[in-house]
Length: 386
Image (cartoon, rainbow, N blue to C red):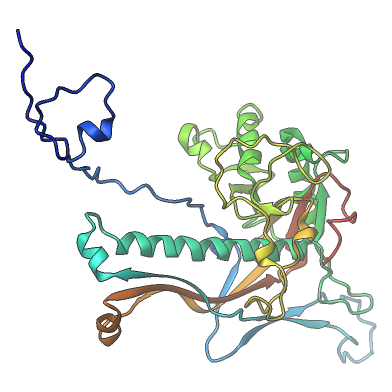
């Protein structure tokens, strides 16, 4: 029996009289058929942004900076009968901290109207969402760097005999290997040391938080179940979410890819050493994981008017523990999305979608800042004061 002459509606410039052999290229057989839209847009890298609600936030209006006043401790003494009470000399030492505004932080995209008309999926909502992610990511990175700086700083109140406590650095582990940053028992010991240090420095036990690298968090999750370090009502997906379920020494733990971690954002790959905990690259990690040199400098350089530290200064940093007073964020313009219209839209036949944010961050109470370091003793190269 003869083969049927197939009508080749899937092929370009073919009458279909010639049967296709097995193994014919897919694009040849089905060239004219449509690509159907699945209804899904695969989103780019998104991080959980958490820092804004964990520190002190103030709104700035009609000014370029915000002043925070520190008051030191006062003394108490017994009254000598018959002597006048005239006040204690140098009773209340006072100092100040000023957080200035960085330049306007923006993220934007131009949407051409014809592209939007022809596209079979909605563009603007997705672009606006990604703009928000970009702003939030930078927000977290600036705050976490500020907390790290505070952990290495003396307190602004430094009057003779009335010096207030400053920041704390705690070494994870007992040797000079960066791999200690991933040892769960060493991390747990560091948490108790941090809690004790903050108690000794008079820091409130309310609102204490910790932020770790994701791999550190998961190392802890695997250990805490048998040690009573987690609420027994929070298990399964809730336990593994990294949204503050695990608590050690009264310190709620979060995970983030935005903390300064051995000089990178959130993680670093390669062989273990003093400035590398030694994690094998899982492959195809993209370009969002890398050095944090873009946040270097201050004093107006690259739009940053506050000092956020140099990359090399974070080469041994591997986690943060802090209380709400640790850092302050000053906002003149909260996160906003703006879209052009009118004559501009007509002139360019499209719209600019712009996200903007005007903020500045710095540490406030150094005593409320604790930096975890690994691979070197506090005070060694890479962990010295800024």
